[in-house]
Length: 505
Image 1 (cartoon, helix red, strand yellow):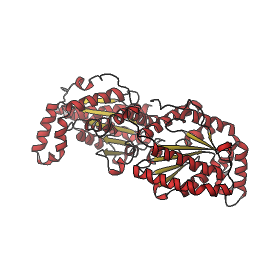
Image 2: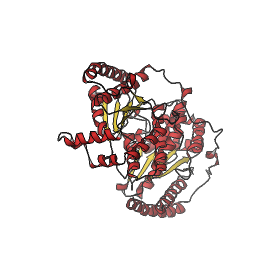
Image 3: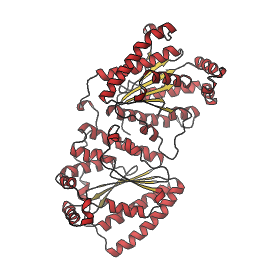
Image 4: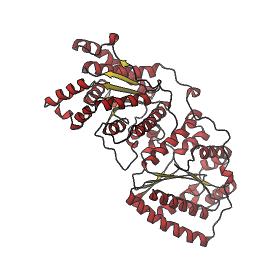
């Protein structure tokens, strides 16, 4: 996994406090200070909306005070621009999907705020407290979280993280007070008392979280939550400080963004593909029938074993992706397979991180998802056509590798195909499509224009194969497609082999 951005030397954040180290506010002080805070929050929220800046606010720490703080923040800001998500200890993510999926899907569009009561930290913290996961595994998860946050901030997301701290005795008093009042007793669960019994372990978990994820781009703000008025006010100040800081800071230049280091000239794997590979009609029929029969059986076994598969199809225009995908789908129960055609992003998708729309389409366990084009558009068409800046597409190699690692670590098999042919064969197919009435829709003016940029795409594809081909995680398969019959059989036999391997564990 790529290393996250610069940390604050792994140190815990300094507590946020008023001058003189006070950790409480009188009622009079609270009501005196609050109007200016609320005005500042609304004004900053409006300015960030106009600037199109997405904001993520994470409220973590003591369970007994998180929800009240979130409620206070919600009441002070314009609710039309705030989406609240709850991922507390009781949150039960869909076990048939990668555990990061709901957090990606909850990310806000540009100009909006996502307020998280609990977050991607909750599964790690709860697992460590219950001892469901080891400290080493938790640290690996925290590294992934740090990379996730760096990916968001690199894309312009403002992340504000607040940790509400209660010492053991204060937390015990808070739980007793809430439990003794019928109006608030519902806020306290048996798990809250259990977590209090392992308070020392909780402190260790918190320190590990700070060490791994207290970074320059997404720092933690530590707030003493013993006094409600003080903690609510200071949380509001933390949010306001983060917002105004973004509004007053100068825009980062492309040179200031950490991107993948060049690895020299990428090997020309495309030119090594044997475009003379062919099959006779008879051999094609025999091998295709056998491969589809095996695929049908393996897809049923995958459903029963809850093994998910992601198949990624990229390749030159007219290389035969559609026909190959049809032969795959023919052999799989329609209830267990889905083809996701990827075109230019919609206006709604453009409002979020480019991986957001792909996270929404990752398959549940037992299902097969076939992507006709994919997240590699960021480092192919967006790179060549200038839709992404150089900093954006260079960052994307690590971001894509991390995305695929998330899928594979959950148990999903990821297999990627580049269907390769020569410029001469592509031209022949374009001409054939143009002259055949029922095929004319397959070739567009954009396809013809892309031919003029063949060298640029050739270079981009070789960079993709060099930087994202990881045989043990998510391998690329360059399939010679000069002969469509050979390509179709080659792809299906490769899918069969990958499914068999996954089912063997």
